[in-house]
Image (cartoon, rainbow, N blue to C red; front, side, top):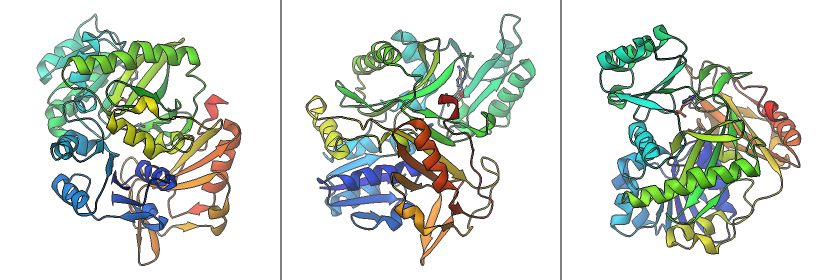
Length: 426
Ligand code: AMP
Ligand code: GLY
């Protein structure tokens, strides 16, 4: 079969790598892909179409006998790509536009969780500066408070306000300076949750689901979880924080009620469900849902999947997910993101990249590209996050050490990476 993967990050490179492993697959198209997917060769080919060019993607899928389309990033989901493909009976993995509101509207997801008794922080919704500032000034409003634009902001629309002044500054930026435009027409202000974060991903056909290994992201730019929030600077799996007992609570209190609730609301949820958790003394609550796989978590959870990924995806589309194997390797994985200097603020692109030849031969090591471009035989930087270097090991320590060995052999002007990925789990 032929598959089409939509997106251009390291997540999509990892999905393409997994798809290429499948004996079921003849050709893997990636739209638009990146320098890494351009260099894979074999079954994998880049297609110069943007992830948001829905009509063109549908035409391409028809013209090229694509049997299964896999949506990596959130924008096409919010735009309704799943509804469009399904309207002409073209198989696609992802939630409909209505179901993707679990990610694309924080107001929707908070109301949904409240209605269905799913544990999450208490919250209020505001539509203008005046009402929000009144709430912020109330003597009974205790700090920190977490302030979030309701719409999609590429993971950057969240402020943790330690006091009133910081809260006022945040709502001024959202409502008056409109730094996120219409994505902040509605703003959620919620209680600050204590604990440690982890991510759990399910693949679901709307009723049945299968779980990947729990993972932990590193969202801050600096070592020791300091500095600004980013798209994610590294990850590892399995996350020991998510014990079997915690995972059971996540399934019973979060995943099952989410699938049942979405079905009851007339928007059955299909595709990948990402549950971002805060775990406090063994009790999980939801920080956010995403309607897709996480980046960089995908770069550790997919290499740990032993079963055929494409067979599972096809089963999720056919409604037979309970009938396919979904087994994991008994190993650990770590991924380290190499970013452009200056990211997540201003950074330069177009830097020439060198990768030592021996990296290709390093066992249990996978160099996933994110913001790279490969043209005329030259590999250059083309984004904020440039690589996600994954290694597998018998245990977490081994996988972390292997990943850093490879990271040190990749260079470009201004390259930056955290040196403490996974350390807190050791
Ligand atoms: P979100 O985009 O909702 O995942 O938020 C981004 C990050 O902000 C999360 O990964 C957390 O680190 C932090 N965060 C969001 N909501 C809360 C909360 N209620 N309490 C504590 N931290 C939070
Ligand atoms: N790892 C965070 C995200 O994918 O949104």
